[in-house]
Length: 347
Image 1 (cartoon, rainbow, N blue to C red):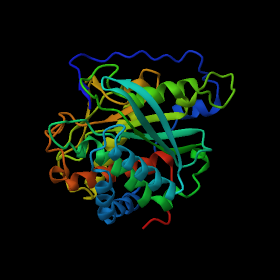
Image 2: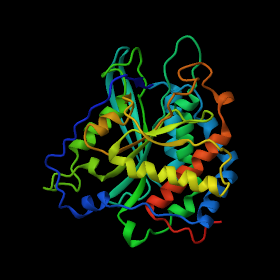
Image 3: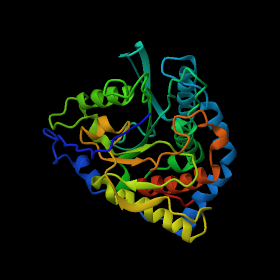
């Protein structure tokens, strides 16, 4: 699923032609994450605890072999799209065919947007495909059924919060989910045998002007405030680092949220997940095609990788549901704080 490189990844940002004078484009650079009070974070945490059974139900629907262009993959596609459409999200499917070492394969990225009329997106993403393995049945629980289930669980459990009109200072931003297909290599990880869905979507959005026919040079990619990529989540005691200076302030928000939740005894862990430390790890993942095109990235992947990575043991039996609930509390709080969503009626 991911290629780990020992070298530092050096990326140049190419923003030629993008206008910094476009008002909505400027606002995303100055966006502030709100601070939530004790009552608000407690209410969100309670929602996470109450939705534990729902999370497991969602996970079970995804936790099947789902190699691209397979019956299992199409079944999970249908589950995700139906799930979010039932919640009144705007859902698009980016279908395409690409060459692989095993011949032509069909792929389908799923893009779900809470309010399609909003100019800007807080984009959470993960991959929903699983790795091809001819020796045993590979389910890919942490890789990446759990991140998919976390996102869907958030959408359903916070439906009433997401349905409220945002305040004026966040009226042009909404939540967006991307479920990438074809993250895994079919044979061996290379630039062309990996990240099929991410490479296709990043290229497509780079070429798609937004607003349509604008002369400011802004594209669909520019609508993304930040790409929050979730991967390899669900194992016990993960450790996260800040991998990108451009999103240091957002990573710091996660550090602060975790600290605040711990201080209120709302997390079951005593060990810190989010380490206040920056590092260049050179991790190849679905963010790369977007990051190369100037999209700010927050990559939430633990280091070291879980011990079950790419093993038959990456299944439900080896998940730590307490850790998953803790991460949900942190991430849901971050989403509500970033979108400035009102919580006056949440309980």
